[in-house]
Image 1 (cartoon, rainbow, N blue to C red):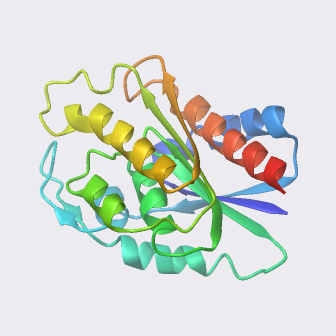
Image 2: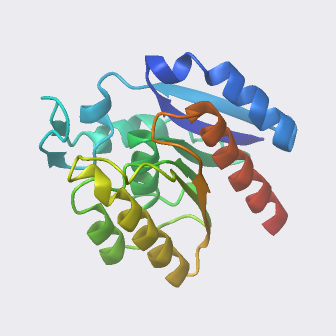
Length: 201
């Protein structure tokens, strides 16, 4: 059985059933989607502390604790585990794969790779999975926010770094800004990573 682990908040849960239906349409039903509810998005999914990029909600750097809780769900050696998510959950999923080799693939849909120093972190470390799906909306880098508008260059750099490591990786561009079709984009990410990993076996 293939287990797809996805950190979620209340907004994600509002469309999780549609996301699951889209994954099933793409790859069949030989998988289980495990939605892990996150208490504080910016605190619990950020790999290290950083100042707020919008609003007053700083990034707390508690991703290590969240990963330890998620790893408790990966104890069955007969199962294959994937991790993925949208936005900051996509960034967390990438970071998690640099800190454990339990995940076969990462499905990072519109990940927040603009997060301070993250691409430098990728450059200095080696990921522990076989396959990575990356995506971004074609309007996401067209924003007035000086940090978030780096996301296009950052995801291009992330793709290049992973490709240079020999990781099976794709960078897919979707239509629209960051807030468009999160369910569809996340489903596409998980479907690609499942299909790609299964074809490698």
